[in-house]
Image (cartoon, rainbow, N blue to C red; front, side, top):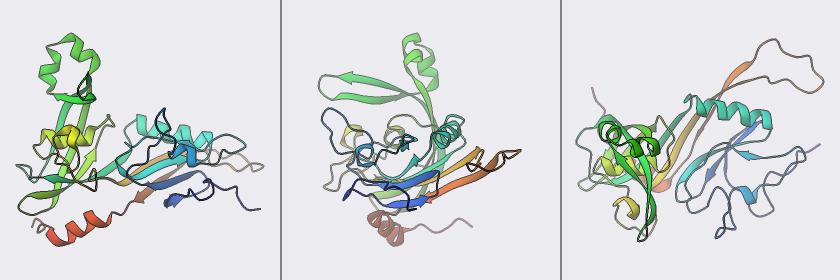
Length: 253
Protein backbone atom coordinates (compact mmCIF):
# COMPACT_ATOMS: atom_id res chain seq x y z
CA UNK A 1 0.00 0.00 0.00
CA UNK A 2 1.33 3.43 -0.94
CA UNK A 3 2.26 5.71 1.97
CA UNK A 4 -0.01 8.70 2.62
CA UNK A 5 0.98 11.98 0.92
CA UNK A 6 3.41 14.14 2.88
CA UNK A 7 2.50 17.53 1.38
CA UNK A 8 -0.79 19.16 0.51
CA UNK A 9 -1.62 18.97 -3.24
CA UNK A 10 0.38 21.48 -5.26
CA UNK A 11 2.41 22.61 -2.23
CA UNK A 12 5.28 20.11 -2.20
CA UNK A 13 8.76 21.24 -1.15
CA UNK A 14 12.08 19.80 -2.39
CA UNK A 15 13.18 16.74 -0.41
CA UNK A 16 16.92 16.37 0.20
CA UNK A 17 16.88 13.16 2.26
CA UNK A 18 14.23 10.82 3.63
CA UNK A 19 13.49 7.48 5.19
CA UNK A 20 10.44 6.11 7.01
CA UNK A 21 11.29 8.13 10.15
CA UNK A 22 12.55 11.49 8.84
CA UNK A 23 12.45 13.94 5.95
CA UNK A 24 14.93 16.75 5.26
CA UNK A 25 13.51 19.45 3.02
CA UNK A 26 15.17 22.34 1.22
CA UNK A 27 13.13 25.21 2.65
CA UNK A 28 12.95 28.17 0.27
CA UNK A 29 13.79 31.64 1.51
CA UNK A 30 10.68 33.65 2.36
CA UNK A 31 8.65 30.68 3.63
CA UNK A 32 8.02 30.60 7.38
CA UNK A 33 8.45 27.37 9.31
CA UNK A 34 5.24 27.93 11.30
CA UNK A 35 2.06 29.92 10.59
CA UNK A 36 1.33 33.13 12.46
CA UNK A 37 -1.24 35.93 12.68
CA UNK A 38 0.10 37.50 9.49
CA UNK A 39 1.45 34.29 7.93
CA UNK A 40 -0.89 31.75 6.36
CA UNK A 41 1.53 29.84 4.12
CA UNK A 42 4.25 27.93 5.99
CA UNK A 43 6.09 24.63 6.00
CA UNK A 44 3.76 23.38 8.72
CA UNK A 45 0.54 24.25 6.87
CA UNK A 46 1.82 22.49 3.74
CA UNK A 47 2.09 19.15 5.56
CA UNK A 48 -0.66 16.54 5.48
CA UNK A 49 -1.66 15.55 9.04
CA UNK A 50 -1.11 11.85 9.67
CA UNK A 51 -3.47 9.49 11.52
CA UNK A 52 -0.99 8.89 14.36
CA UNK A 53 0.00 12.55 14.58
CA UNK A 54 2.67 14.57 12.87
CA UNK A 55 4.66 15.26 10.84
CA UNK A 56 6.63 17.47 13.23
CA UNK A 57 9.33 20.08 12.65
CA UNK A 58 12.39 19.05 14.68
CA UNK A 59 13.94 22.54 14.65
CA UNK A 60 13.38 25.94 13.06
CA UNK A 61 14.80 28.18 10.38
CA UNK A 62 14.15 31.90 10.03
CA UNK A 63 11.66 32.65 7.27
CA UNK A 64 14.34 34.46 5.24
CA UNK A 65 16.85 31.59 5.55
CA UNK A 66 16.88 28.84 2.93
CA UNK A 67 18.17 25.30 3.28
CA UNK A 68 18.07 22.12 5.35
CA UNK A 69 15.10 21.66 7.66
CA UNK A 70 14.49 18.35 9.45
CA UNK A 71 11.01 16.90 9.95
CA UNK A 72 10.00 13.77 11.85
CA UNK A 73 7.33 11.39 10.61
CA UNK A 74 6.88 9.70 14.01
CA UNK A 75 6.80 10.88 17.62
CA UNK A 76 9.62 8.53 18.65
CA UNK A 77 11.75 9.94 15.84
CA UNK A 78 10.98 13.50 16.95
CA UNK A 79 12.10 12.76 20.50
CA UNK A 80 15.32 11.09 19.33
CA UNK A 81 16.21 13.99 17.02
CA UNK A 82 15.40 16.67 19.59
CA UNK A 83 17.68 14.86 22.03
CA UNK A 84 20.54 15.11 19.55
CA UNK A 85 19.92 18.85 19.16
CA UNK A 86 19.62 19.51 22.90
CA UNK A 87 22.86 17.59 23.57
CA UNK A 88 24.68 19.60 20.84
CA UNK A 89 25.55 16.47 18.88
CA UNK A 90 24.35 17.85 15.55
CA UNK A 91 26.62 19.50 12.98
CA UNK A 92 24.93 22.52 11.37
CA UNK A 93 26.82 24.34 8.65
CA UNK A 94 25.68 27.52 6.92
CA UNK A 95 26.91 29.48 3.92
CA UNK A 96 26.72 33.26 4.13
CA UNK A 97 27.56 35.80 1.44
CA UNK A 98 28.85 38.84 3.33
CA UNK A 99 30.22 42.32 2.72
CA UNK A 100 33.96 42.60 3.25
CA UNK A 101 36.28 39.93 4.62
CA UNK A 102 37.08 38.87 8.21
CA UNK A 103 40.51 39.85 9.52
CA UNK A 104 41.38 36.16 9.81
CA UNK A 105 40.67 33.36 7.35
CA UNK A 106 39.10 31.18 10.05
CA UNK A 107 38.30 31.26 13.72
CA UNK A 108 35.70 30.75 16.44
CA UNK A 109 33.55 33.44 18.02
CA UNK A 110 31.81 33.11 21.40
CA UNK A 111 29.49 35.84 22.68
CA UNK A 112 26.33 36.28 24.69
CA UNK A 113 23.13 36.97 22.71
CA UNK A 114 20.15 38.81 24.14
CA UNK A 115 16.82 39.83 22.66
CA UNK A 116 15.96 43.53 22.84
CA UNK A 117 13.00 45.54 21.52
CA UNK A 118 12.50 49.09 20.34
CA UNK A 119 9.61 51.05 18.89
CA UNK A 120 11.63 51.85 15.76
CA UNK A 121 12.97 48.39 14.81
CA UNK A 122 10.83 45.96 16.77
CA UNK A 123 12.90 43.14 18.25
CA UNK A 124 16.41 42.00 17.39
CA UNK A 125 19.30 40.17 19.02
CA UNK A 126 22.30 41.97 20.49
CA UNK A 127 25.75 40.56 21.17
CA UNK A 128 28.07 41.21 24.09
CA UNK A 129 31.22 39.61 25.43
CA UNK A 130 30.99 37.13 28.27
CA UNK A 131 32.80 39.55 30.61
CA UNK A 132 30.40 42.39 29.79
CA UNK A 133 27.38 40.22 30.49
CA UNK A 134 28.78 39.01 33.80
CA UNK A 135 28.82 42.60 35.12
CA UNK A 136 25.03 42.93 34.83
CA UNK A 137 22.77 40.49 36.63
CA UNK A 138 19.82 41.39 34.39
CA UNK A 139 21.86 40.86 31.21
CA UNK A 140 23.13 37.57 32.58
CA UNK A 141 19.58 36.34 33.16
CA UNK A 142 18.41 37.31 29.68
CA UNK A 143 21.52 36.32 27.70
CA UNK A 144 22.46 32.97 26.21
CA UNK A 145 25.95 31.88 25.08
CA UNK A 146 26.45 31.45 21.35
CA UNK A 147 29.46 29.92 19.61
CA UNK A 148 30.17 29.98 15.87
CA UNK A 149 33.20 28.84 13.88
CA UNK A 150 33.84 30.42 10.50
CA UNK A 151 36.02 29.81 7.45
CA UNK A 152 36.43 31.96 4.33
CA UNK A 153 35.63 29.82 1.28
CA UNK A 154 35.82 32.47 -1.45
CA UNK A 155 36.30 36.22 -1.77
CA UNK A 156 36.72 39.09 -4.19
CA UNK A 157 37.53 42.73 -3.46
CA UNK A 158 34.25 43.52 -1.68
CA UNK A 159 32.45 40.24 -0.89
CA UNK A 160 33.23 36.95 0.88
CA UNK A 161 31.55 33.57 1.12
CA UNK A 162 31.79 32.21 4.66
CA UNK A 163 31.22 28.70 5.92
CA UNK A 164 29.70 28.90 9.40
CA UNK A 165 29.48 26.03 11.88
CA UNK A 166 26.93 26.75 14.58
CA UNK A 167 27.85 24.98 17.82
CA UNK A 168 24.75 26.42 19.50
CA UNK A 169 21.34 27.20 18.05
CA UNK A 170 20.46 30.71 19.18
CA UNK A 171 17.98 32.97 17.40
CA UNK A 172 19.68 34.92 14.56
CA UNK A 173 23.05 33.51 15.69
CA UNK A 174 24.64 33.34 12.23
CA UNK A 175 23.37 36.80 11.31
CA UNK A 176 24.56 38.49 14.50
CA UNK A 177 27.97 36.82 14.52
CA UNK A 178 28.63 37.80 10.91
CA UNK A 179 27.88 41.39 11.91
CA UNK A 180 30.19 41.11 14.93
CA UNK A 181 32.98 39.99 12.59
CA UNK A 182 32.48 43.21 10.65
CA UNK A 183 31.07 41.31 7.67
CA UNK A 184 27.26 41.63 7.73
CA UNK A 185 25.29 39.26 5.51
CA UNK A 186 24.16 40.78 2.23
CA UNK A 187 20.44 41.51 2.40
CA UNK A 188 20.39 41.53 6.21
CA UNK A 189 19.44 45.16 6.83
CA UNK A 190 18.47 44.42 10.45
CA UNK A 191 22.11 43.73 11.33
CA UNK A 192 23.85 46.25 9.10
CA UNK A 193 23.90 44.41 5.78
CA UNK A 194 23.27 46.19 2.51
CA UNK A 195 19.89 45.80 0.90
CA UNK A 196 19.66 43.34 -1.97
CA UNK A 197 16.79 42.50 -4.30
CA UNK A 198 17.40 38.77 -3.70
CA UNK A 199 16.98 39.10 0.05
CA UNK A 200 19.06 37.45 2.77
CA UNK A 201 22.07 35.55 1.41
CA UNK A 202 22.13 32.86 4.10
CA UNK A 203 21.82 29.13 3.45
CA UNK A 204 21.50 26.28 5.94
CA UNK A 205 23.98 24.36 3.80
CA UNK A 206 24.24 20.99 5.53
CA UNK A 207 22.89 19.03 8.45
CA UNK A 208 24.33 15.99 10.21
CA UNK A 209 22.18 14.54 12.99
CA UNK A 210 23.19 11.37 14.87
CA UNK A 211 20.09 9.41 15.83
CA UNK A 212 20.04 6.69 18.47
CA UNK A 213 16.75 4.95 19.18
CA UNK A 214 15.07 1.60 18.68
CA UNK A 215 14.15 0.87 15.07
CA UNK A 216 11.76 -1.96 15.92
CA UNK A 217 9.09 -2.77 13.37
CA UNK A 218 5.54 -3.54 14.57
CA UNK A 219 5.13 -7.28 15.07
CA UNK A 220 8.87 -7.99 15.14
CA UNK A 221 10.91 -9.09 18.18
CA UNK A 222 12.32 -6.26 20.29
CA UNK A 223 16.00 -5.48 19.72
CA UNK A 224 18.42 -5.68 22.63
CA UNK A 225 20.22 -2.42 21.83
CA UNK A 226 19.54 0.85 20.09
CA UNK A 227 20.82 1.49 16.59
CA UNK A 228 22.87 4.56 15.69
CA UNK A 229 22.75 6.22 12.29
CA UNK A 230 23.27 9.68 10.83
CA UNK A 231 20.88 11.89 8.93
CA UNK A 232 23.04 13.77 6.42
CA UNK A 233 21.77 16.28 3.90
CA UNK A 234 23.20 19.12 1.80
CA UNK A 235 21.25 21.96 0.21
CA UNK A 236 22.15 23.60 -3.09
CA UNK A 237 22.11 27.33 -3.87
CA UNK A 238 22.93 28.39 -7.42
CA UNK A 239 24.10 31.93 -6.65
CA UNK A 240 26.37 30.95 -3.75
CA UNK A 241 27.83 28.00 -5.62
CA UNK A 242 28.55 30.23 -8.64
CA UNK A 243 30.39 32.70 -6.38
CA UNK A 244 32.43 29.84 -4.91
CA UNK A 245 33.44 28.59 -8.36
CA UNK A 246 34.43 32.06 -9.53
CA UNK A 247 36.25 33.30 -6.43
CA UNK A 248 37.44 30.22 -4.53
CA UNK A 249 40.58 30.84 -2.49
CA UNK A 250 43.61 28.57 -2.91
CA UNK A 251 43.76 25.73 -0.40
CA UNK A 252 46.23 25.97 2.42
CA UNK A 253 49.35 23.83 1.94
